[in-house]
Each structure stands twice: as C-alpha cells, then as structure tokens.
Amino acid sequence: MTDKPKESFPCSECQAGMMHMQHMTYFTWLDEELVTVPNFPAWVCDMCGRREYDAQAISWLTTILNPETGKASASKRRPRPTLKKHSGTRPTP
Image 1 (spheres, rainbow, N blue to C red):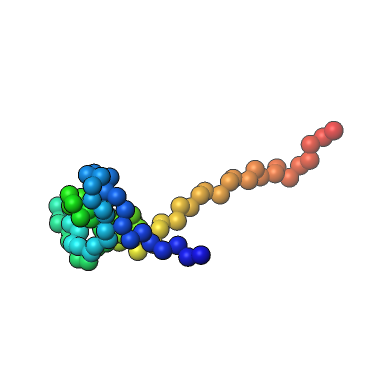
Image 2 (image 1 turned 90 degrees about the vertical axis):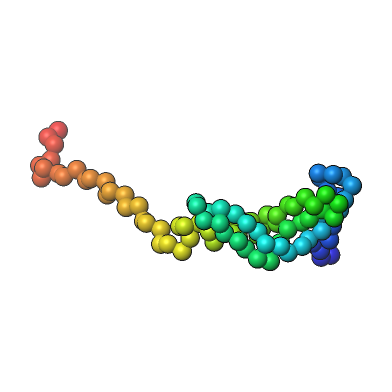
C-alpha cells in the first residue's frame, strides 16, 4: 500500500471549493528586502482563491533563508573542572 499525496481537499475558507496543488511565485520579506521564489508549491482553492503553502516547502525555504545556515557552529568550550591538589602529606589517624 503506497501513500499517494492528496490531489485535492475541501477549502477550509469557503467550504465550497476544492484545494488543488499549483506552483506559483512566493513572496516574503527578509529584513528590508523582498524575496521572490518562483515555482513554489501551494494549495489553491478553485472557488475563493485561498492559498495554503506546502509546509515542507516552507520549512525548506526557512532553512535556506536563515542567515546561520551553512556557518560552522561555534563550539562552546566548557572550562575543565579544577582538581584539588594534594599537599603531599597524608592525614594522621
């Protein structure tokens, strides 16, 4: 048994239309710059036009646009615990 991706599902906005997968240009702001991503997957209602972007594609895009992506993580060095030095004498009984 294979899990096929949904071909369509009812629109949660208008309840009359069906959501279908389409590829469109996605727009988002990154600081003060407008970023456009062509051929981005989105579910679009054939009646009201509501768009729901594919969650996996949004996750992928967020990773790519993250300024920390590709940078080596700074290793947090922990200080070594200090060992108590022995005085060289043994305690007397």
